Length: 102
Image (cartoon, rainbow, N blue to C red; front, side):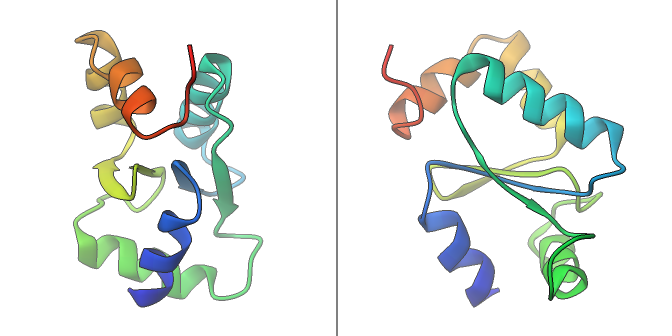
C-alpha cells in the first residue's frame, strides 16, 4: 500500500485501470474531457500490476478498476465518479485538487 500512497501523491488525479476495461475507458475519457490529465496506470501492462490490484481491493476499491484517486484520496470506481459528476461535485473536487484551473 505504500506504493499506492506514493503513486497517488505524485499527481492530482490518478486512475488505476486495465486496458481491456470499458468502464476504465469511460472514466479516463470523462476526466480527460474535463482537462484533468490524470496519471493512468494500466495494471495489466505494468510490473507489479497484480500486486497493486490486490492493494486496491484491500483499500475498499471493489472492483479494483477503475480505481480513482483525486487529491491523494480514494474516490472509488466508476459508480462513485459518475455519481459525483451527476450531483455536480466532481468538477469542484478536481479544482480543489489542482487538476483543473478554470
